[in-house]
Length: 350
Image (cartoon, rainbow, N blue to C red; front, side, top):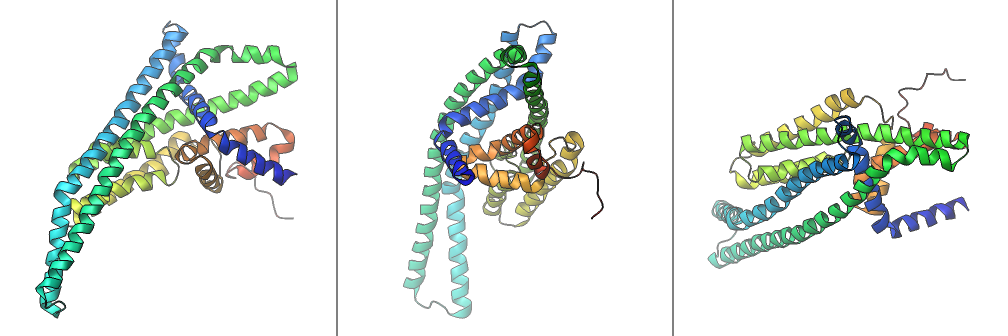
């Protein structure tokens, strides 16, 4: 029965993706903006105006990041088709000619001409495919902006209702149950607000540093790769790795020497290592208290279930599950197994 219940729950989560993902994203944004709203409220700004102001600031940042990524992707595809493809084709043709002359591989000029046509055709087709993908992604980005507007509207209502939540809980449940529910919700809110705020500024720092590295090396569309690094840095473990691939590949195509690509790769990896392994632990500490295996499994499961949105939300969801299990006695062993183990006292083996 337990296995059947898990399978049915997974099926229900997959079918309700269109409803649950926007709600969770809106709740996540409300938790991210809660400290900002409280800060504005201290300046005697009305709660409604404070929520709208905080949402406007965040929407402005995301709008420009997404716009830079979309416009830069189109410009990159066009540049690839107009400049890099002919150069790569010429290099491939020269390489074939040199091999033919040195090893007498192709003595017939017609064969060399056919090979050149095939190389040119394959490169041109690849460039056209990339242009088509860029066009499709532009439409997807515009659709994403519309969804973000709806999500921000839901987040605004959540922010407006937040000050009255605790009072409603006290009036809805018995005192002991109300205390436990308030404790769980308060713990989730505090930890996730801190996590999201720190993650936002660390991702912004990562994006700015990636942009600076690409500008120094001379890689085209530096703002696009910085925006991409900012967005993908919210995906744990693999997001920063994926963000390093496009600028390195572009550097290989753009320059005749391999060294600009090497310096781009070294610079981005250095940024990811310093921020991921030194700065993040110093700022966050071990507040989430999740083991790397738990994060990896959550990333794989929620990424499979909800795609990219699930990968973004994986840490948020698994941290919330851990806090709930931590405050319910029968489920506490699950919470312990999800922890990193650094806070646990060492017990001698029996």
